[in-house]
Amino acid sequence: MLLIACPWCGPRDEAEFHYGGQAHVAHPEDPAALSDEEWARYLFFRDNPKGLFAERWSHAAGCRRWFNAVRDTATNEIHAVYRAGEPRPVIT
Amino acid sequence: MTAESVAGSVAEFAIGRRSPAAAYAARFAAASAGGAIRLAEIPFLTHLNVRADPASPAAERIGAALGVPLPVEPGVVTEGGGLSVLWLGPDEWLVVGPDGAARELTERIRDAAAGEHVSVVDVSAQRTTLVVAGERARDVLAHGCALDLHPREFGPGRCAQTLLARTGVVLVAVEDGFHVLVRSSFAAYAAEWLLDASVEYRG
Image (cartoon, rainbow over all chains, first blue to last red; front, side, top):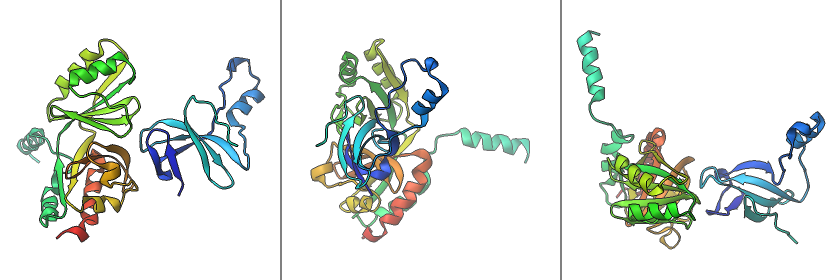
């Protein structure tokens, strides 16, 4: 089981969290101006890297806040957690 | 069924309240007889869910009106005057008070908010309070809770929303053990689980 450090509550079991997919997917400025393909890209197309991936998590069984984590999809190591609204940290 | 007996059973349901774990009182008492573990229910406490911006003047005024500041540090409980305020989230608290205090406390918080963006909801019926106390309390909870409950990490004055035996609970550390705030519909399950987990610790 993953041990995920909630930015508010500290390290907790993965079972307390919900996964929210890729982070930093911006809502289009003017959705009405988008073509069907562009809208579909916004809705359904996500990165699928092998390596570092910024993703959203919700501490559903704890403080119920959403936050972001940078996880290595190959090793499951979590390199950073940060609160919603904060920029993605640079990981070297 | 006669009309009279229907009226009789309606009256029976109308009288008094039954707490979610009331049916477990005798089994809790039997399990507590050895002294190493003490199980009990504290029924009908007042629970108010309060949401406000922690940096706002309203949050400060609410703290002053309650006589207990709203804790801003995660997992901290502030206490005073028979009330405790539990940190549930960065802008969310649970005010715990004695039975029957909901209306008066709600009004006090609402007055203190003075029109600012604040939410106060009476959630007293949402959860009941199970007491897990005694020297083996920590061992019992450790059967179903992944948190480090050692007093060095989770002593009196700390609280946490977490999972206990896969059930969402609010754990509160108190002087001689823990209060487990569990949803009413899960209270019977939690009571059964606690009774089962405590078998090996009964003196």
